[in-house]
Image (cartoon, rainbow, N blue to C red; front, side, top):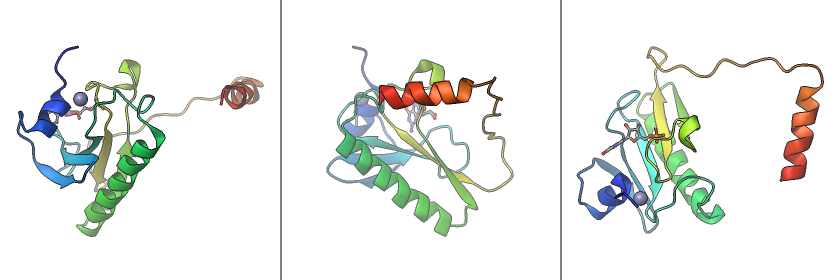
Length: 134
Ligand code: 5GP
Ligand code: ZN
């Protein structure tokens, strides 16, 4: 396995700008922020993404993401995006599970997805497949 950048950050082998730490969760500023304050919240233990992270732990990561989002809002952001990229095609580039907390001010280059239309009864078919796969 190639060395994991975020594991190195937690160990202190690579410097970071820390904003939060507890027994299981760590948060630090993204090196290339969408806006200043863009924070990455990660489990201290290495997991690849949401799929292999235990439910209880991903819950703790999400709670910390919410705390940081609340703090960012208090500091003057107009909104906050919280996102997690899982898998290469979803845009994941660092394979240590992480949630992005991104302050928004209304004028930046960050844009969200553009929705498509469903064909015929595709929507109901897809929903049924998801329900049976749960
Ligand atoms: P992903 O594309 O996997 O969802 O997000 C990975 C994020 O990690 C990117 O936004 C990228 O800027 C950030 N990142 C990559 N390497 C480092 C690093 O060494 N330090 C910090 N602070 N952030 C990093
Ligand atoms: Zn790691």
